[in-house]
Amino acid sequence: MRIDLHTHSSASDGTDSPAAVVALAVGAGLDVVALTDHDTTAGWEPAAAARPESLTLIRGAEFSTHVVTAGRRRSVHLLGYLFDPADPAIVAEQARLVDERLQRGLRIVENMVSAGVPITAEQVLDFAAGAPVGRPHIGRALVQAGLVATVTEAFDTYLAGGGPYYVPKDDTELTLAVEMIAAAGGASVVAHPWGRSQRSVLDEARFRELKERGLSGIEVDHPDHGPNERDELRAMATRLHLLVTGSSDYHGTNKVLRLGQETTDPGMFAELVAVTSGVHPLGPGECRTT
Ligand code: AMP
Ligand code: ZN
Image (tube, rainbow, N blue to C red):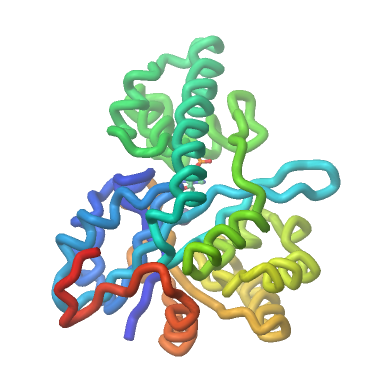
């Protein structure tokens, strides 16, 4: 069984529609795919409606969160699975974050325009097309303006955290997000915890505390992790009795990643689903779409 638990559609900053993601998942040989758009569940219904019969769809989201270490706020992404999308705390926090993303995206664009970078807010909002605004939408405007060849190149030059135009977002505190997902019947997994050198931000003591607050797992097999990071994270997950997942973090053409590039062990997947009670997996033989 091939299981990819982290993908993005055009409901956030991926380039394929939710319906295309589920169709492409089957083409990529997947049996299970999780749709985990940033701070929104807007892709759940179109993905469920388009789900090919043979595919199991796990409805999820990637929550924008932060931790404070050494007096500095650091961004952490938290995957939530099979939570109740109508949970009032989640609805309110996602609405706040969607607005936060819009204001922050416009401020990044303003910084660029003031420095003479020839892009416009309209261009970026067109690429977002109603989805929560993310830096990849700004990256596509930079590509369209001919300033960079790819969105990845835009991240290396214009969009990097700490770069000249960067503006942070006011993300949810990580522990509160873990508790919020658990209270809504979902399972939570820290996404790519040691991608982009966050080792000191999320150490074993922090994971132990998160586990006590309801964290279910760690995304270990992710394209941003090298072999040493994977080995150390896997050993830590075993010590702390946390589940281990693997996923591609597919974004369509916004990133050079393939659906199913990394996968999750079926036993781990079964344990993850077992702790949830918000919504159920939509699988073969399942006619319901909600
Ligand atoms: P934001 O949510 O606006 O802070 O932007 C983060 C998003 O940009 C996430 O979906 C990341 O996967 C994506 N991202 C980060 N670095 C890169 C990169 N080098 N190339 C393409 N996408 C990236
Ligand atoms: Zn992601």
